[in-house]
Length: 142
Image (cartoon, rainbow, N blue to C red; front, side, top):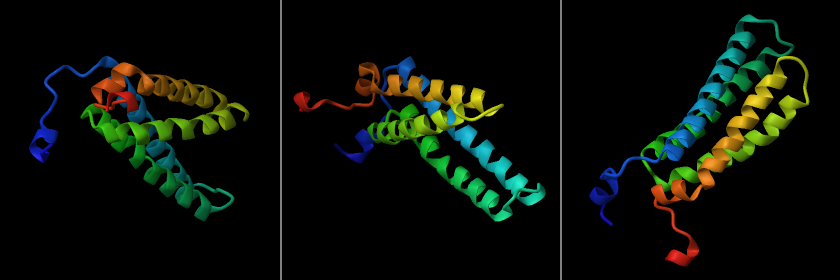
């Protein structure tokens, strides 16, 4: 397959499940950026126990947001490679959601929201309609 064939958009409409999976990944990227900016601001202007740790945590969250953001873009463009990073992001989100659920106060609703988004995205990403739209074939169909 030449590069011009690979870059030609698929004329069929994008399945709703694929769009929803991309939206979930994009939402997680947005949440990571917001959390990272919050940590940076609090590290610079607030009074954290360790300003350096807060700043580094903020930078790390912003850097980690690149993964689901690229996965969301790849899913929207129907790139088969994007399913892997999207799946890994969702699997990594589950222990974070569990940790938030075991905490107290306002972190519990954040844990519930993260768990719902991660499980929803996982279900959407392994759906046969999604894998077909991404051009991913099973071992038997080679």
